[in-house]
Length: 185
Image (cartoon, rainbow, N blue to C red; front, side, top):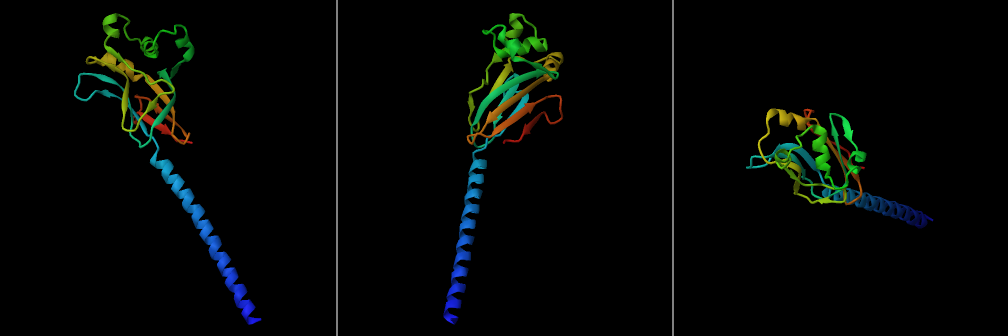
């Protein structure tokens, strides 16, 4: 009888140890998954700044994270008023940047428009880790009035991680901290 009691106690202890090992393994797997997810997270930054070593200014987006950012949507507003896609549908051949320039009141003459270097960050594009792109650049120094026109420009970028988490980057040069991230979820 005593030997059966000892055997029963050993069996209970063995089951408890096995359950602890299973729980520890599950916890370790979840922690590893979270670590892997964070190690492949993109982190987009945006600024209205000059090109390094050149007489230019532009709106720059760079990926300072470790993973790629899959761009889902880029929207523009001017002084809080959305530059809606309906405005862009009127003329399919016009680039988004041209619509933005029209909205902020940039001169329409060729000399002024040719100062703008056009690039794009369309939905469906990928911004690799360590890469940057200028949504637009201006090829000469801006006057104070020209620069103020761009200060009302707000940009919102919706992007996804390789784990399909959706992140939002909003840029507003009027704010002290000109960009903010809305958490990835």
